[in-house]
Length: 168
Image (cartoon, rainbow, N blue to C red; front, side, top):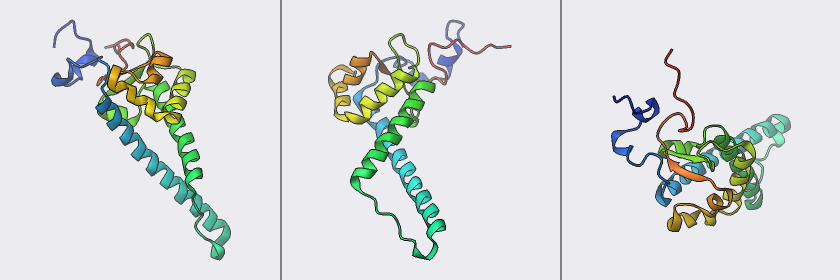
């Protein structure tokens, strides 16, 4: 352990330290988003089952499972995913998929996004997902360019801009 390395860096695997803080590539970002999409499917499925159970308790013998439309699923899914991203990016800077892949969304000064910036980024990412693929060219999506955000490799538990924990 060297005295010049902050404690957060020591939690990063040795193989990943050279990438720490670099902008994430398209493969890592797509894999993180695929994980987040799978989580969304589970959340929507649980919501559907919960709604069905509530209807069953209310209707009893005349119960029928509710019909799900593509449009309704898309709208509810978009709202839920926007809320999940907003909360994740404004609190820890990472969704669950980002956490598994060692990614973090940061603002223009390297800090976490505020609630408003996280919400706008989430809306843009959910409403215009193909624009995320600009990261193939520039390692920044169109959303990142517009909002001056970045997705970086960051395996540390605490955001880079936060002070190290007090040892006492």
